[in-house]
Length: 146
Image (cartoon, rainbow, N blue to C red):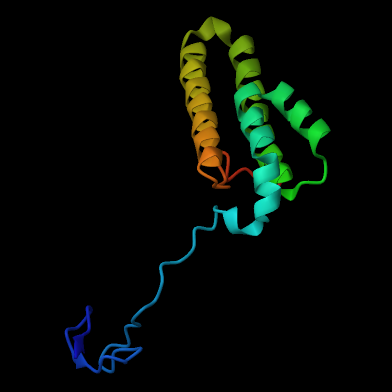
């Protein structure tokens, strides 16, 4: 016999739902909507993983090298979209800092923001090393390049 974790009602061992409160047993946790790892073939990932890592380490130059090396990889296209989002935000932040350099506050806030974006790139690099394809935090809510 097992007991419902929600209301404590005693149930049969093969019960799928609690007869008292309706709690489902054996339900899995909802999938992460930002994790796209299962969408890519293992061969595509293993073949293009170094290029994806290169993009996050080298920025624009890494993007160019990766796109020249493998144009038809869905895995690489996913990571290209993510790093382009990061690079566009970095570029716009740099422009704002350059235009408002005289305010002192904007360059300080911009430097902190650019450091955060750099840390996001490093996190993405290590996620790729671990075999994951997860949309990076901060830029995942940006609508362009979906």
